[in-house]
Length: 100
Image (cartoon, rainbow, N blue to C red; front, side, top):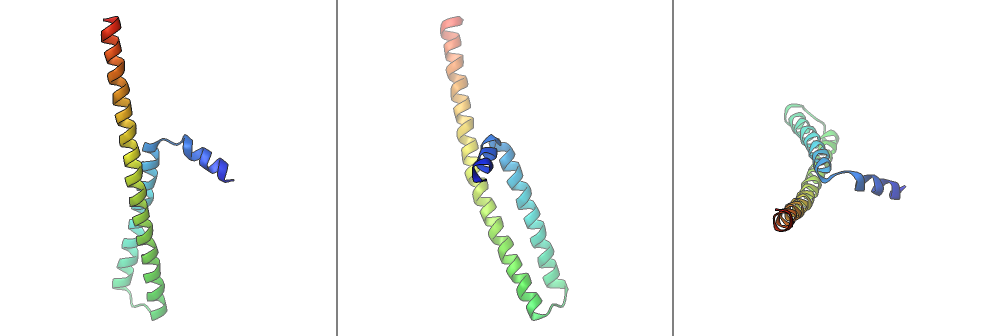
């Protein structure tokens, strides 16, 4: 099962992976804001308040993980862009050297 899952991930472009993670991060931030609003406005019992605090802590951890993943993906995207620019420059150099 993990082989097929990693094979699927390899076929996904870096840009679409960035978009997907940004969407998840946005959803998580929205859930966190709703939980914070609920914590401020509602009168909760101690157990409900603790459960809500635990849920908020989990969401904060997820947001931090998403930010870390985004940073790595953006670095990879930057490397791919630099490689593309280098290949374009080499192609242009060969074109102007041998064809033009």
